[in-house]
Image (cartoon, rainbow, N blue to C red):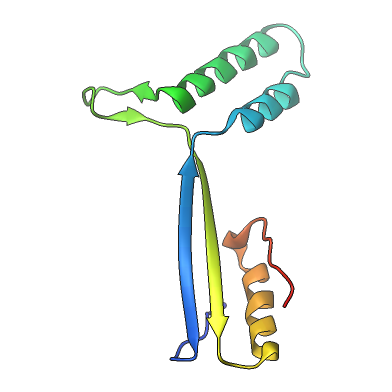
Length: 110
């Protein structure tokens, strides 16, 4: 398991953002899963409409009006600064890229 460096020479900032701008993902999913004709296309259209409703208004639950299910777009970012040399920063960057949870990474070059 990769660990981030510790000490006074390293500063890390984790940021998570959330929005309900998921229409492109819903459309992409609808196109991808509507390849099969007939009832499958109809089911996918209904699923896309349900997803759009969840993104805009949320879906009701049995726990009351204050609790609802939302469809959101979550993104997380990791910012790192250091007083160490550039090679150590590059090592951390490569370790970050190898972490399974990193997903799509957009790391600028130093």
